[in-house]
Image (tube, rainbow, N blue to C red; front, side, top):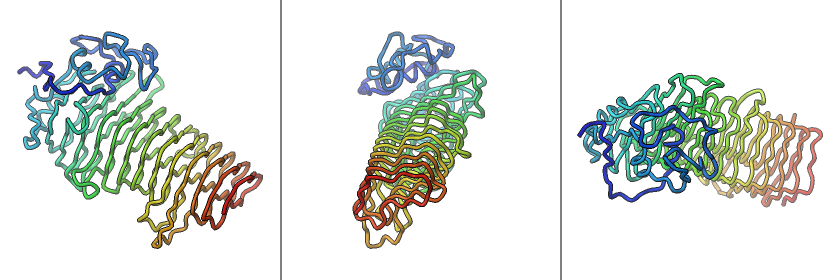
Length: 433
């Protein structure tokens, strides 16, 4: 079989609905084309729905109706790794075969992983190309890495506008306790005329015996604008980050993300505007969400309807402005005896923190000092309608905190209710007992 033969592998496999529209619309592929088309403008498509309502698959196809089979049968070229010699039996070393498919790919190609377990012994890498890696679903198409470096390393910087990476429907396992980063996707730089974007959907990143083995970091994105991570499960080995953003990853969205066993669940570094974290679970971490920019830069971060079960901080925000933290559930982990701040804001400006619930279980072995909502060196912060219990201090408006409000918050099992050490703050109608 020729390496360029568009063999789809197991045609009898059930059609699993994925974000196939991302492959077509974001990579700019034309229907039934033998060569990759020029990248279509983002504005050319209707982006209603979850992520891109229409595509250039050949019809106006809603995201919910696009499947992997649609992508493979209606978009060309794609490269089936089995056509390059991969076996997928879990014992054959498929590294060279998959790397050959990656090396042969043209800009905009799709690398297809049919159902199976693909054993690899070194990092799978690609540079200077937009591409998609598509399996038949996490748990169905599996890459099993038996080396101590990164799993997949991508550097799609090609100088052209709108470089795209799409990763859909596979599991990335490591057998090692010294593995690096599962998915490492980096652009070298960003220019105002470029739109770098990475879509990750239905991907599992884990160890075969977590937390004894696992990736040090699940995902690292660098200079990846408007990226989208959804329906993704990450299990580490109690180091590093589930997801780390480096440089400017402006407009990145995390939805239905689950992270276990990392130091931080989501780690946001440098100025990053428009970050959205929704419907996300961050469990068995030191810090659920960590965001630090510097000099009160405006990241416009939103954390909504998410859950953190952490040892030190549920949400820790430093040195930036403008954000909304609403409707989250934060637990202190039972095994933690460390000092704990559920939501902590330090040197920030213009934040709304409302309708969150903090639960700190009263464990006999917990010798830490537990605080619910902590605001330090900040201005124009609103704490409204939050709940907490029990805690040493429910809320602290620290020194150099001014023009902030704490209202209609409730707490039980509280030693100190709302402590206001700042200036020109309003504390009213809180119930603490």
